[in-house]
Image (cartoon, rainbow over all chains, first blue to last red; front, side, top):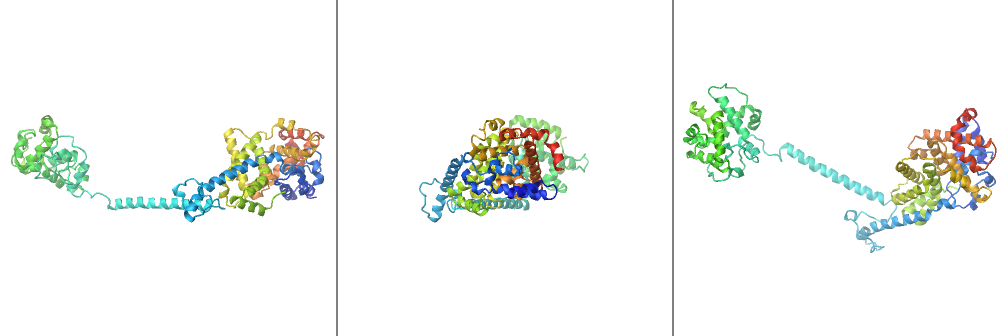
Amino acid sequence: MALRRAWTGFRRPGRPEADAAERLLDTAAETAGAPGHSPGDAPLRPRGETAPHHRVGVPSPEPLAELLAAAAAPARPDELAGEEAAVAAFRAIRQAHDAATAQPATAARAVPAAADQTPPVPPGRAGLGRRAWPAGAGRPRRRLTAGAAVWVAVAVATITTGAAVAAESGILKPTPPSDPTSTRSRATTAAPPTASPTTAPVEAPGVTPSGTPGATPAGPTRVPPAPSVVGKCRRYLARNAGPGRAPAKTPPPELVEAAGGAAEVEAYCRTLQEADPGRGRDGAGSGKGNGANNGNGDGKGKGNGTGNGTGPGGNRGRGGGSTNGTGTDRDKRCVTPGTARPVRPRRAGGSRPE
Amino acid sequence: MRIAPNDLAAAVRSAQDGDEEAFRLLYRTLQPGLLRYLTVLVGADAEDVASETWLQIARDLHSFAGDPGFRAWATRIARNRALDHLRRQRRRPALPVPVEALADLPAAEDTADRADEGLGTDAAIALIASLPRTEAEAVLLRAVIGLDAESTARVLGKRPGAVRTATHRGLRRLARLLAQEAAPGCRAGADRVTSAPADVRSGADVEAGRAWR
């Protein structure tokens, strides 16, 4: 008998032990999981005569084999008590699956079966379902959706990288600030905090100052640079070109950046000055205005520049007070008010009020 | 008797096509082994976990590719459900079959026909469950569910060599236990089995060294 042989083999120490164990396991496994067997099906088990020994503990010549055989004994009825529940679950799941797949199937192929009672199916799944619960239907569908997801991911990645590359290569980027006027666009949104008159639209010389400068639409794309830049420009020019000052002063980094290079700073700042206060400067009276007053008076009546200068000052709503305040500052710093002032000294040859 | 692998594969395919009877055959084929295995893992909650297992089998059957073998696939599901259950319970797998339950079983002579199958099976499972868990699992998967060494290793997430070693070690330990039981005398099987776990802890290893080394 196989079990007995296996057991005796197993008992022998040494090499044959492993083989005996394997035989033992195989023999026991052969008895495992008899479907629907009742005890009456005993003939399927080759050990009818050993049945009395199945109870563990009853003396048996092959206790281990008996133990394993008992452990792998055919199903008892109580072990299969959940069968109907399991089958019912299987049925319910299958019906749900059918319902999910039948509709797209009918749509795609006009399969008539059970199309009516199927609930609507999410549109994303339409056309993917082939049959109702086919063998392995889930896998191809999964692969399809997975493939679609991969494609979408790749497409998104391509688009984003394309955008990034385009931006990097300058396609989508705003033009570099080589032109000083264009760089002013950076300052557009920020409302000028101080009463610096340079915020007036630069490129619209003929435009009357009536236009609200804060709105910045005056110049098409040209917008006044950030006040800080303007102020720095003024300071830089004043120091650099001022008569009593040391000529070589490194420009502040903001200016270098705005101008596009250290060498360009002076030209950039001058352009800036001319664009704005320069106008006032062109007007003959600008110089006087500055010199005389703290900016309120600056250029008021005179010249084209007056228009610009006053325009911003008045319209910004800072009112006279602010202007006056700045005016005092101006006197000290010699910078703020009469933007024309720093420039003027250069041209005027040292007529600085300071 | 074990269903032939080809028949099992055919039943799986039929069930995947929606054949209820095929699913029923799968259930009858696998449920006893799974239930016993789950008894070792989760004890008295084995039936609940088995229900969860079959629910998942029914749900995921269509995605079963047939590669690892249905038996191993279902066993892995059962094991995962059991481990989830244990995680939820936050307790280690206790003595699988409560001692009281075994003691309350009717005497073998009273229900002789059933005792041959039923009591013997329960007692055998209880004895196997007294092994260290890896050994118990390996023995059960191989001898009761009928997986080969490779499938057992895959289900347990171990290497085949380790599983083989665990199986043999478990068998040796079982043989020791049985020899120990047989020595003191013959009492009712149930009593003996319920005392087995204590024997494992007390003197089994001493006896083992004498007998098998």
